[in-house]
Image 1 (cartoon, one colour):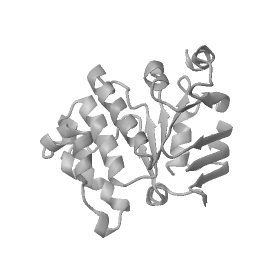
Image 2 (cartoon, one colour):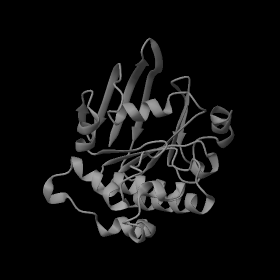
Image 3 (cartoon, one colour):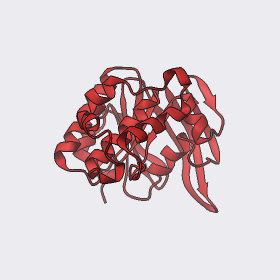
Length: 231
């Protein structure tokens, strides 16, 4: 579904990504792991059109994406759940969800009932402002807003950060359910090792903007991976 090949990215004169490559399949969770500051978020921003990349290619379902804007990436089928969630605090849950309509045709602009099956608390809090939700509830809202766009690729950046354990478990179940539907590729950037190890189908460890280790679940050595992604 998604092929990132030899990607480079700069912030000014500083090079962050050095020829990074990644493949994500539909119906699979592809984990990207590493310590802080190695380029994981920059990779997701490049794929999502949030920051321009300097070189390399991004291909979605066999079609090249030529340096897309965030809107173009979203229209193409890439949904991004950023680190920190970035929900609109003064807008209601309903309005936050409807923000996902922007990249959809008018005939598709509706909140599917399965969103509330995945995250029942959101239906209860539809009229509550986003800023009044707990951190875990905001994370659920951010994922739900991304799913509104009917993505073919779902990018998740640190979805467990600052979240209480019971919500982490729920988010894990939702990711597994979305994976098992087989319709989208899920790219998961995460530092919570045990959460990721139990969920992902493949692993890519990033060190200083380069892939230092990669492999499929069941083939990659746990301790070798842990040594690459631990501080």
